[in-house]
Image (cartoon, rainbow, N blue to C red):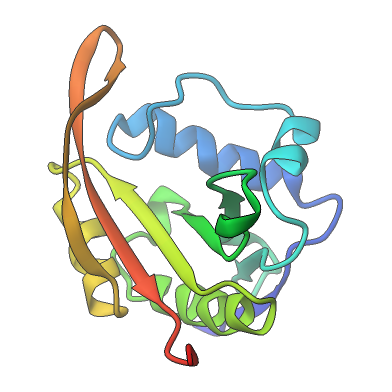
Length: 164
C-alpha cells in the first residue's frame, strides 16, 4: 500500500478529530475525556510541524502535531508530541514516517526538545518513541486522574541532534 505524507491543512480537522476520538475511546492515549472542537485543536497545537499520513484513497490514517509545554520564553524550544493513528492502521510501522518528519521539521523551526508523556500500560507507544530516539526521563507518579483513577505517566524526551 502507498502512503503520502503531507502537511495538515485546514479542513483536515474532521478526520483528525475522529482519529483522536479513537484514542480517547481506547483509554490509553490521553487524560482528555472529550474531543475538542476544531477551533480548540488549532489553538492547542502549533501551526507548524503538523503532519498527516494518507492512504492511497487520500484518507487520513494518522496525524502528528506539537503542543506548547510552557509560555515562558526559556522553554520556547520545548514541545509535547501528539501522534495518533486510526485503529485500523496501528502497529503497521507507519508511525515512524510521521514522527521522523516531525522531528526534522521541529528542528528547522527552532525546537530543541520534544517530550512525550505516556501511560505505562501503553507499552507499544513507549517502545515506538524509544525506537525513534526518545529516552526515558522518569516516571511521574499519580500526575493526574482519568475517570476518577490516579494515573502515572512515563516521561520521554528527544533532544535535537543539532544543539551546539
